[in-house]
Amino acid sequence: MSDRVAPNNLEAFWMPFTANRQFKKAPRMFASAKDMYYKTVDGRTVLDGTAGLWCVNAGHCRPKITEAIRAQAGELDYAPAFQLGHPKAFELANRLVDLAPQGMGHVFYTNSGSESVDTALKIALAYHRVKGQGERFRLIGRERAYHGINFGGTSVGGIVSNRKMFGTLLTGVDHIPHTHLPEKNAFTRGQPEHGADLADTLERIVALHDPSTVAAVIVEPVAGSTGVLIPPKGYLQRLREICDKHGILLIFDEVITGFGRIGAPFAAEYFGVTPDIMTTAKGLTNGVIPMGAVFVRDEIHDAFMHGPEHMIEFMHGYTYSGNPIASAAGLATLETYQDEGLLTRAKELSPYWEEQLHSLKDCPHVIDIRNLGLIGAIELEPIAGEPTKRAFSAFLKAYDDGLLIRTTGDIIALSPPLIISKAEIDELFDKLRKVLMNNI
Image (cartoon, rainbow, N blue to C red; front, side, top):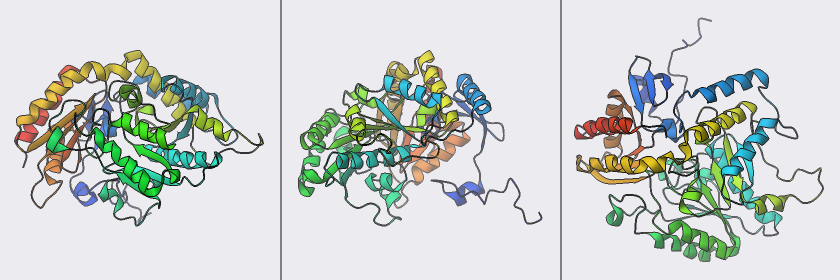
C-alpha cells in the first residue's frame, strides 16, 4: 500500500487535447454545475460559454435528465445490444426519427461523435457493396474539417495538427477546400455571400479519381472545432446536387449542429438540404452520458435487409450501442428540449446574440467575427512566431474572470447552453470584452 499513488495526484491521468504540463502546474478544476454555471473546487462561479464541449445544450444538472438516469440505473443497468434489446432503445429511436428530416427513418447507436463518423463511413462503403458497386471505396472530406479522432474520422478530417503524428491513416481519401474566405467574408453576420463556387471543386476531385470509385462525401454543415466556419449561401445545396449527379452519398456531421444549436433540430432542416447519412452525439444526451446516433435514409437501411433472415445484415456495432442508461438520458433530454422549446430557441435569441458578439469588433487584435444561431467565433491576429498563444492567453484570463470559452488556433469559439438568457449573454460579452481589451 505504501507504493500507491495518492488519489489527488494529477500525474496518472494523461489528459486529452490538453497541454498536460501547463495544466498540472496550475489546474483548473470544476466541482459542480447548475444550469448556466460551473462551480470550481475553490468556490468560484464560471459562466459556461461553450455548453461544456458543444454538448450541454439544455444546461447543467437538469432534473428530468438526472432523475431518469438514477431511475434507470436502479431498474436495468445494462442489456446486450447484439441479438437482444430493451424497450427504451427502441422508444428513443422512434423519437429521434420523428425529429429527423423526412425519409431518414432509421438510427444506428454509437457512443460518441467519433464512433458515429466511423460508423457512417462504414455504412456508406457497405451500402455500395451490397448494391453491387464495391468499386466505390473513396471517401472525400474537407480541409479544416473535424470528424472526431478515430482512424476514419481523422482520415477524412482536415485539421493538420490532428493528423500529422499518425502516418498515412486510411488510403483512398481526398479533401475539398474549406470555405473560410476572410478577404471576402470578414465580419459576416450569418451565412457569407461569397464561396458557394468552392463546392464545384468536388467535380474536379471526383473527375480526377473517376466518379464510379467515390463512395461518400462528408462535411460539417457548420464546421465547429476548426473555428466556426459558416457555409456560404448555396454551398451545401451545390454539394447535394453534385453528389446526386454522380451517385455519391452525402454525409452531414451534425455532432455539433444537431439538437437545436443553430435554431432547428438539425442543420439539415435549417439549410433545407437533406443528406443521405447524418451523424450525431453530444446534445443527444445533453453531454451527460456518452451516446451517438447515425441517421440513414430508408433506402440505405433497406438495401441491407435481404438474404436469410437469421443472418446478420451489417457486421458492425458496439458493446454499449443503445445502452439502457444512455437511452433513458436521451429520452429525458428530448423531453427537456420539447418542454422548454430549446430546439428552436436559438432562432429567437440569435439576433441579440449576433449584436452582442459583433460589438467586440473594436477590441484589439480582432480580425474577424462570425456567427450563426447560438454559435460565434472571434478570430484574433496571431502573435508573430507564437501561433495559438494569443487565444490561449485569453482562455486562461477568461477562466480567471469567471467565463469558460473555447479556443482553437487563435480563434475563440462560443456555443452556450440553449437556456441562456439575454442577461447572461450580456454577462458573457461584458466579461469577454474585458479579457480582449487586456489581452496580449
